[in-house]
Length: 279
Image 1 (cartoon, rainbow, N blue to C red):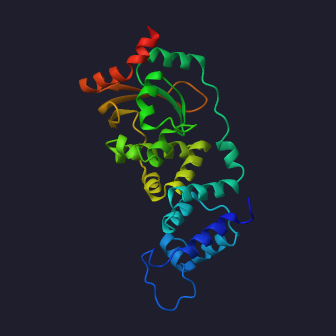
Image 2 (tube, one colour):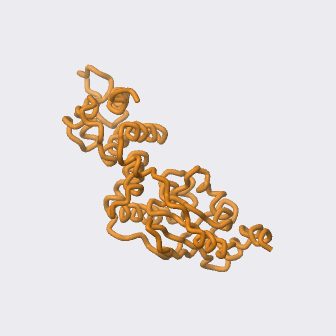
C-alpha cells in the first residue's frame, strides 16, 4: 500500500466536494473549490486537529465510527465506502489476523442435526453472524433473496449492505436493530470477529449502522417472528427459535417454522424438491 494512502484519499475527496454539494454557503473568497478542513471536521463531528493528523498520516488508526462519520460527510458511494474500509484494513495489523482466523470445524453431530431438520429452513451461525452451515431447505428459502451470493455469507452484513434486504424484510428496522444488537453483545464480550465486523459496517454503512450499534441496550431476541416479502413465495410469516449448542465458540442454531397456514403452504412448495430428493 502507498504511504499514507488513507490520508491521501480523504484529502482528495475533501478537495473534490464543493460547499454547495455539502449544503454549505459558497462565499466569494475561497482559495480552493473544495471543502476546507474546518468545514469537513464540523460536518463529521471531529476536531480540525484530528483531521489534519489523519490527512498527514500522523494518525493511521482512526476508529470505525470516525471513518463512518467522514464517509457520510464526504458523501461516499457504497463502492467508495468499501474502498475506504480496505484502505484501513490494509494499514492495520494484529486485529485483522485474529478476526480472519478460520473457525473451528463444525462437529459431525451438529451437521447430522441439521440433516434431521430437513426440509425445514435452519442454519448455524457464529457470534459475528457468519453462516457456517445450513439445510437445503434454508438454501431454497434464501437463495432467491441473495443472502448466499457472497462467498462468505453473513446475516448481519446482508441486512445492512444488500439493497434487497429492505424489500425482503418487511420490518427491516426491527431486523436491523436486532442484528446490530447481536454484534454489539458479542463485541462487548471480546469477540474479535464481531468487533471487526462492527468496524467494517461503521465505515461501509455509516450512521444507519453506527447509531443502532451505539444505542443497543438489549440482547438479540432468541425467538420471535420475521415477516418476509419473498420474490417467489410471496408474503411469509416465519417463526424462529435460536439454540446455543455446547461449543468453545459462541454459535447459534436458528430454525425457521411457518407461523400461519399461508406460510406453511408456501414453504412446502419451496422445499418440495428437498423432500423428493430424500425419498
